[in-house]
Length: 247
Image (cartoon, rainbow, N blue to C red; front, side):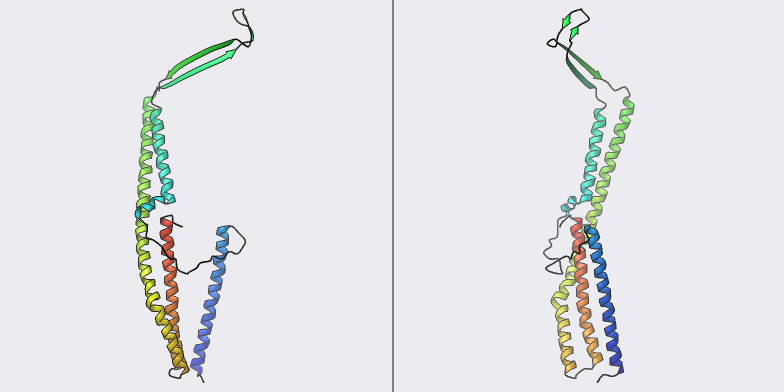
């Protein structure tokens, strides 16, 4: 009973759905390939999750940022720079050396006495080393201190940057969670009501096909927006986990 406009609309909708499905299938194959490369395997591995939404995420404390691998690396550089400074300082100090020898001679010695292996000869030595080029060593100490300051500044700079990113990630999580809550509490329920009402009215002859298409598309768009909101929320959670080195 449909007219040419309804028939054309139906064909257009079908074509658009086929294109979307094809695009999704291609995207799926692409991400599977990327996942194989990441895992360095030729086997097809499909992640499994109990829910499409990441749940039970606690907002972390600011001090957890110190567990980030980047800060851990910079912390080790600080320790290394401090140790280098202490080493250069130690090289300015006098060096005390001690030595001890224990040996034997088999045969006739310089004093024309015959010795065997049971006779032991002992000697010891002691010395002290004093750096002669003190100015050169002082310059090396200053250079080591500068490197120590650079390492400290790099650490603080990266820490401040990560703290800023973490605060932004927290706000993104809260914002995306609020948006997601709307769909879970209201949006999805409205979409279901729209779909059921449109189907009932269409089958009862209260609305034509074009009206039904518009209403159902509205419901589908709500569901699509929900999926986009879940994806955005999950990405913000993943970003926050990355900044706090949380699995």
